Image (tube, rainbow, N blue to C red; front, side, top):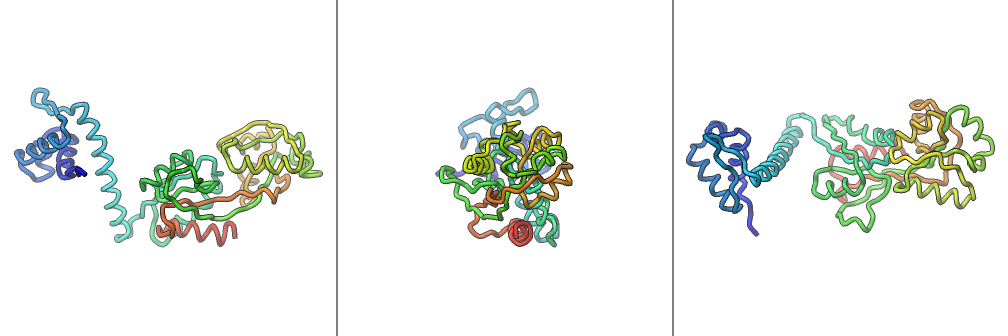
Length: 299
């Protein structure tokens, strides 16, 4: 296996960033012949020219631009690693990068993450929202510390990671005061034909609701489908239809959206998972999230 000489890459990166060998010399405290020799060695190793000279200026070639982008990522990660380790030893915030699957209710995501912000050592939290498969790919290469999801990692996903069940709860049905008064009586049979706002069919909640409705021979009217749970709740707040949400945050849902509880579907369960590359959780923020979820939020 051929290994890249990262000293050579560092010198190239500084020259490209500073725009000249002379300025790179000042930053690296090295002589011009030394840096020039290291650049030539890198070009020989890569088999490509990285700079061309335009007048007295060095300009990146097309390949040089590609190499520079990779170098930026490599040395940026190095700085993050150094900052994280220094932060742990000097009381600076520990960086915690978490992926939140886009179908996860935002109020649940906040409730799950909030304990990490109350640790004795400060935490700098970075949240990324995306599809589950993309977040899991980032987790696999350690770009994320954790993924919060509404479903465990499946057997078809070729990522070595571990599911940690944080908890589960039933499903509550909400609506504006007018609709709640209309459909609260004889619930849940009243949902037959009722205007209903659905999560999209790529969610566990959608599949669970459809299975339960089919078993009970109840057929709500489809008033809309939404991938984003916050957008679904916004439409529900406007009276477009009845809508589901986790029963564990029903009081917050009513306050946030000014809606009322129509009823609960306790046999329809929502489960929430922390997915990590660690079988045993080690990151202090992840441990705090797991313990608070099991003991307080879903306990």
